[in-house]
Length: 159
Image (cartoon, rainbow, N blue to C red):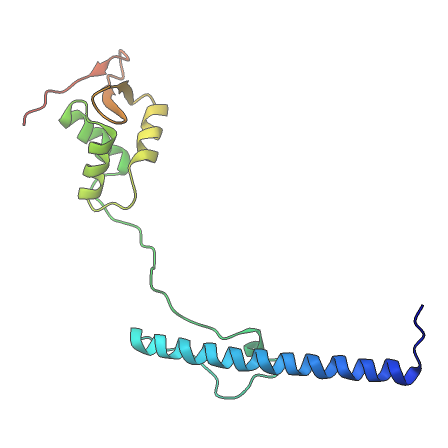
């Protein structure tokens, strides 16, 4: 068992505080370097950034980190003439029995983001369309269900 004198404990505590202060300074220098790089990036992007030229105090809001106001990808909702369900249903009616890939190609051609898979699944659950397997294509083919009889309505494909 190690016995320490009050002077040894005090010296050890002083050494730990000194190391913590050195670490804090190293981190502050690294944060300043990161701020400088971000400022260059923002300038290159033509954006402005709210930075402080003074070193933040421990209790200031800036001490938590710089507030970077970069919004490169803002998500926007699309505006379309038809809802997603209407678009997919009308495409299936027009094409007869398109594959999943054909529906997704139509989806993207309309300028919609992502894929139509969620819409297809919703229409399947509503029994608005029916899935048919086709060994000639990857995935499935779809036909519109006749709501009164529950039988598929297959439109003729012209083209």
